[in-house]
Length: 410
Ligand code: HEM
Image (cartoon, rainbow, N blue to C red; front, side):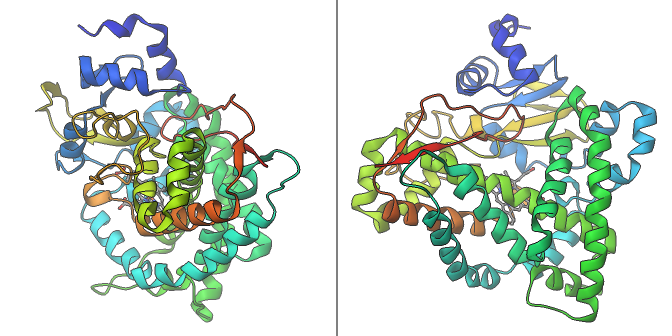
């Protein structure tokens, strides 16, 4: 194999843990071998914008990859955690047509633009209340106080999870997420705990869904129970899978979109000052640039349905292909000077929300939350500063997530 960097420690580090700064490696992969077989992980890594764009709409790639979990677990463990594997196989993101089309149609009925727009005043109130709690006297972790609670509360309210059960719900879904985002050999460390947490989640949803069947409320859970198209409804198992997945997909992602955006503004005082000077004119560009610059979801995974040539390489049926969205969004062919955070950059299609059939269902909501958060932040905290230079990123494959964002307000 020609790629010079495969002998380097960074490469192996990337294969085991996410790097604090993956971009130099992404840049080298894109320049030297944009479709690259990663031997330690036994999968393809795709780093160029055009290849990612083409791959995400290429029907020769399947989204159904539950068997990657099965293959990574010892056989007897697979038997023990079978209900977890069955549940994960129903996540909309892991389905292909015709199931995917049916699930997407049903969830679209419940997830209408009108419903999202109606959330706006409530999100504004939540943002203000959370910022009231950001101390001006001592350094505060903005993720714990603001970027984390906001999307979690929005989704819990939207779904209709009772206030008293929200913490338990969040903790249980996080245990399932540790399993779904752990790659390869790490999966087995999380499988049994995730299976246990899932039991609790299903108990909770069984109860809540039974209540909605008798008395519908004005929430997403009632809308999902009601949703019917072509005489079809979601089965109970599909309903549980949709509720768990929507929370997983919309919570940490949006937390990171807000946190990384605020971080980028604080690290680029000229850009922060420009935004303060023209909030209406530059807000859309700020949201899109934040999503491009530190894409919260760094990869979209697919499996080849057949042998075929892609990006100059022959991909074999059954092989996994990782489209590195965070790398595509820093491709200089698509975004000149990609390492520059520039809120006035010409807005072009980035891949932070994916592309094609599985394009993010919550993109409108996520953009709205980011915009409301940034607006309030500029208005309420104009003198905020980073309280540390030592920032740590979570060692998780698939998401780009700060551990903490300590700030102080002068
Ligand atoms: C900044 C925040 C967000 C980012 C960066 C993001 C990113 C993504 C990406 C990249 C995908 C496609 C994955 C693939 O092709 O395999 C996706 C799918 C999805 N997202 Fe988001 N997302 C965000 C927020 C949300 C929110 C707020 C929700 C819901 C409340 C949500 C729900 C979903 C769902 C249900 C899917 C699966 C769609 C399908 O498979 O048809 N996301 N998201």
